[in-house]
Image (cartoon, rainbow, N blue to C red):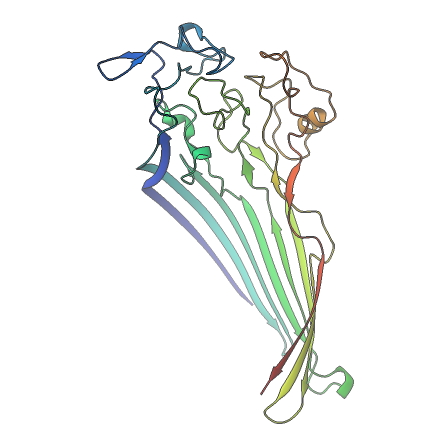
Length: 318
């Protein structure tokens, strides 16, 4: 048996991340090029239904804005090299061979990934252009625990002819949840971007999805036809236990609320998420009409990984 352990720390600077340049500062701005009133005066509809903002702040203390710097332009996305990321990872591996016919390998990884910006799409622009430090949080790629094991078992060469040349193998994959950002689903801060506003002071990627459990099996047999030719027949079962593995979850909380209504949801299927889905949580929405708040679909599965799949394959070697 061979057992190995390792630790890896990575730090990256000057990573590319996006921002929206066309946003008035909270206190307003007046110069020869443009005029922005303070957020305490404007905004109001149609910029956002939540303004104006006393003291240029939302009710929870976050910055409010009065719209765009240049009214003849929309969202102006710019990529700069100011992003930072860190990765800590510890690994443990076990390899063994039991006799001549059984091989086993297992790997466990604990990791923690943090950054202050991910990807270069408009969804990844900062909630507050003038306070980008708020973007530092767990990365969207942060998966704390992952375990992968595989084994292969062969039938002995001295076995009866009907049992000879069989191979049985499996891959086991266990993974802790991936993170998602809880979005309001509306432009509550008046920066004209409705897709980056988070609920309350919740950081990026504060909500965890579902765990992933998957077991794959394979049974194969080789039929030797001549000294130089053989025929392989294999049967594969992927996700053999047919577990419903959630890929992405709905993380839009609701367009008429600035903060959470009741308990803060933490992860897929927790009590706070189920209460929202069952209609047991209600807010006093700031806007009239529209979708109910919180969103009854919040925390539900949006996409799924593949269910059980069966496959038969053949290969001729000559």
